Length: 217
Ligand SMILES: CC(C)(COP(=O)(O)OP(=O)(O)OC[C@H]1O[C@@H](n2cnc3c(N)ncnc32)[C@H](O)[C@@H]1OP(=O)(O)O)[C@@H](O)C(=O)NCCC(=O)NCCS
Image (cartoon, rainbow, N blue to C red; front, side, top):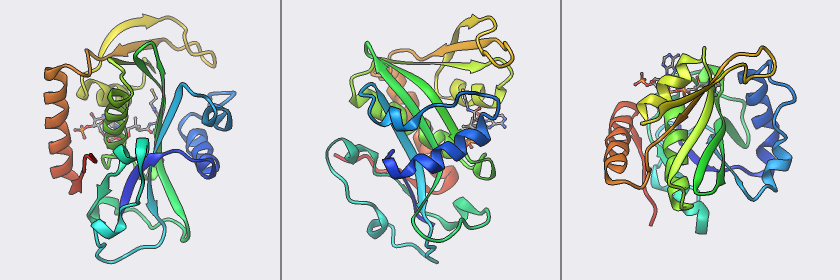
């Protein structure tokens, strides 16, 4: 089933809000994604698939045509077995997950990342993070930062895998239950060492999940 990443659009907001509610049930108020669409600092990437299924997808033909800033985002998931969960409802695009970040002072601060529960552990979180890092470097960011709940070891593992390290701890950072927030950040994402590590991870991800990631010139 073909799947790809692209920038968030207005028509995605209902699905994004649904994923947000599922992933962060105690977080209130939740992010105002309508507002975020008009926020020049904010960038959102969604991983989605067409709801119509195709037995053996024609890989190149299924890529969305886009241009300019969005052209970076053309990616392709090329194997049916990648999404072996039950099929989504038919019609339109089905959003599987999203990532949001703000670019401030050459720093890409991740505000949100979430994948639909039934699609987790299938490489989508990784795909979103890879896409975000690629886009952030195209937008001239030098580093990426985030806060994550101290108990959220799943997300922390993902971040560690992609070169984030703990840079601080904010006691009682989360307002709902006063849980501590772990601050994490990358080294210079434009450095040769970071790029080489990212390239290795992309290749491993591609091999593991049967995904072809195409960098668009
Ligand atoms: C965090 C999240 C986005 C990961 O998405 P995902 O699609 O399941 O992640 P992937 O399948 O791409 O996993 C990639 C890596 O993440 C880590 N990871 C993901 N889920 C994990 C889990 N349950 N336990 C341990 N590590 C996990 C692993 O390092 C994994 O790499 P590996 O397969 O080589 O071990 C997803 O769990 C989610 O939506 N969680 C709820 C929202 C959330 O907590 N967001 C983070 C806010 S800071």
